[in-house]
Structures are given as structure tokens and as C-alpha cells.
Figure 1 (cartoon, rainbow, N blue to C red):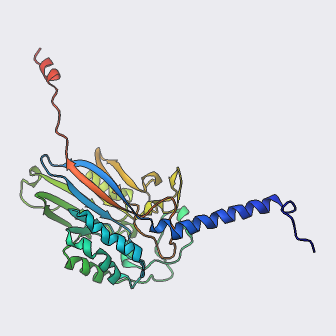
Figure 2: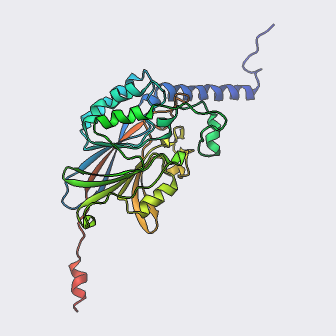
Figure 3: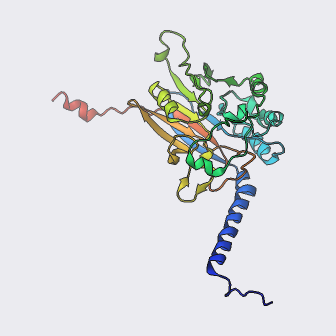
Length: 326
């Protein structure tokens, strides 16, 4: 029997083969290259009180550490060389029940610096195998028919607390760092609808008149959470959860955000407006993935270094002032 020649093969079969090969190539790239192609995104904001020295926040999110991830562990440990003034961890640290000790080892060098944290769903429950197409229908949900596997959240949080990191799960806390008073307010994971607002720390009667900065911390940036903190006077809000879309289209961006946040806001520093107020919101693209979907495409895993600087001094227009006396 004569073997078929290229000409005898139907064009649609050739096209299908080309598409399949391209798809497999993209999956291989995303699984073996991009998911370990870690990067540091740098941002700058002028929001500190007048006269304050620059202050650097290292924002970590969605580490999703699995056992045996040496490249990720070494990269996290190397981040300590940045010497941040504060580390903010916005949750989803795990993707395997046995990864708590490796996580504490990976974050050990960073826990020499002050830190605050809130949990995500994958700090409470181990991830499960999902149909990837389900994310196109809306945010993921916990299974109804079978109970998800619980993780030892308390042991992980105790490990953070033992090194001085502050738990902001539905709590507030004031910290004086580098001579600046930071008022924090954090919530439990909005993706699980566990958020309860604790307001801002209360101190002296005239605390609003003394120099300070209000920072809100949440795992999932649902609009209701952004609205609340913006209207409540936050100067900065930090969140994660979205993985930056995880699988993105080059030149377009994220296809999904796994919450009700517009996809063009799935990663980056943006202003959020609500109730006549505006708050800068940094959404981290995250560092890891679920162990059941270890692929990133056009969305490199990232940590974010935010450099805060003093607000610009208001200008005084002498020309306009002189006109008032004419």
C-alpha cells in the first residue's frame, strides 16, 4: 500500500496538525519555562506624609508552593536581598498539604523584616482538579457535593507569627515603621465571602491629625471590597488572587480575573474610584499556580516592590493670589 503524500492529505488535517503542534508548544513553554521565569515588578507612589523618607513594600501573593520547588524557593529567599521595609503577603501560599515547612523555609530570610498577612482560599483548602473552561463562566467556587481537603492554616499562621508577622484576618493594627505610623486594616478571603471589616485602629483622639498612612490588605480584589476600603479612606490597597489572568493573550492581556474585577485590572497598579474618593490598588499577578494547572502564558510570575515617597508639596500660584487683591 502506497503511503499518502503531503498533497494527498486534506488541508484541514494539515491545519489541525499545525494548530495542535502550536498548542502543545505553548503548553510546554508555559509549564517548563514561564512558570519559573520569575520577575520583580517595581512601582512608585507619592503617598507618604510630607518629610517622610522613602519606604519600600515587598508585596507577595499566590505563592502556591508545592513540595520540591527549589527554583521558586531560592528565588523567594533571594528577595531578602532587596531589604524591604515591610513585607505584605496577600495569601494563597500553598498548593500541597505537606508544603507548610518548605514554605516557612522559603520565606525564612524575608521574615527578618516586618510583615503583615491575610489568607486566601488555598491557605484553608487544598486545590482540586477543575475544568479550565469553567473559569470562563465566572469565579471558581468551593465544591458542594464533596468536602475540600482542609489545610493546617493555624500552623502556617503560627509560623508567620513566631517570626513577628502580623495577622490581619478581619483585624486592624498600627505599626510604627521608620518613624511613620501605618494603620492597617485587613480582611479574610472575599473569594470565600469571609470578609468582615474591622475598621481602622483607634488610638488618641487626634490621631487623624498626626502623620500616618492607611493601608488595606485583602486576598481577592472583589469590587465590593475595593469600594468599601476606598470609601473608608484607605491610602493604598494591596491584593492578589487573579494570577494576572495566568493564561493571557499577548497584546491583549488577561481573559479572566477569577472575580468581578475587570480583566484589564487583573494585574498592576490602578486607581479605584468609589463614593467620590480614589485609592491606588496594586493587584499582584502572583508567584505560583495550582499544582493541577502548572502553566503560565504571557503572564510571568511576579513579586512587586512598591517604593513609597512623600506627597508632592502643594504649589502656590502667586499670580492668581495677586489677582484677588486687584
